[in-house]
Length: 453
Image (cartoon, rainbow, N blue to C red; front, top):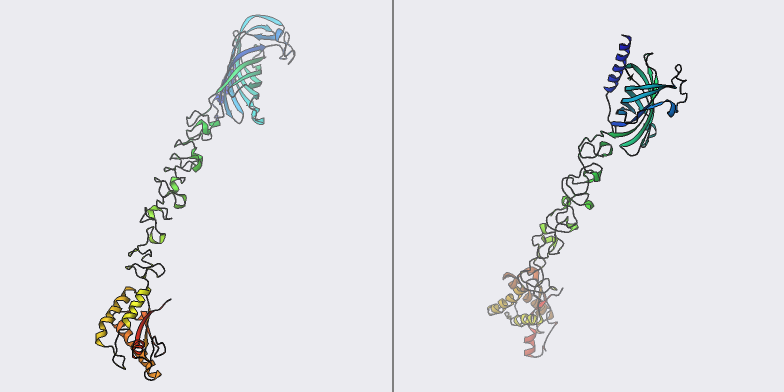
């Protein structure tokens, strides 16, 4: 019953530790295969055994070694540097202390909770382990539970493969089984690294462990396949260019689509990616005449010029009559026109000594009106003149009244009053000799002259 109790205790220890709530680490599992040596000498028991650690490294005299693979160790990382190790071993005992034995068989099943000091100094190549646990060992038909203390060191050639060396002291619960040391040398392989998103990149190396990604981006995705990882891609669902943060530029005009008002037509940056076909500074979508240059004030269309004189209707004071730029689009009064006006004006007849116009002068006045209507923006002064017969004062008054009479007639027949003014000069500006009848006739006249700006 006593032996069964101790065996139950050792079994319970193994089961309880193996069921611990493990936390994942880089490689939570490891398996090691190798050889072991059983040494029954330096354990502090009576002869033929010696004191503790006496001749601890005497391989030739005291170590029992089976020349084949004789140890299998499975390890599971728990958390915070702790691991659980299950070790199965076989051997052949032909040395007990300084005495020989007759090829006794040896079997061991052990569970060790170990602490890995490598996490304290963040080593990637060397592990130092200290462990405690229990197990059950048999020498031939004699078996007993053991309390184990363990010290080991591992050197890792890579992340997965390493060489392990450890020494375990096994204290037997029963007197009929000798306490002993067991040394193991093996090749260990780590595995079981977690790949949560299944992208082939272990979580420990995966910058995006919960989203499938690419090795080129440390496990992070590039959803649109444009070579820019999603975390740095301003348009992760649309293939684009790295220079635009992963956003597309469909028309290749240097303006990314999300900022391009015309994403399918190459355009200019100053027009948010839209074209200006006629080069008038108005983008085509706002240009009512996209193929003909025109000012923005007229929505990209040229101003109309109805009379074709080179002066736009908006600036043309005579939009339906061809004129000159200098005269704001209106025809200019030439010297010939001016002469024609005065030739007509000189034939206007008045009643003697009065300002009333004779009826037969109506045709001449209508001819004058026709000329004035050709130059609608021109202003004229109507000047009255007399000969020297009579008093100067009377002549002055008569010249003014006759000029005014002509002006009134023109206004009454459609000429704008703002275009006309009148003046009388009496006998002050003769054009012929007042001493002759012919000269006086020429001096009695009306002139219509252009007012120049």
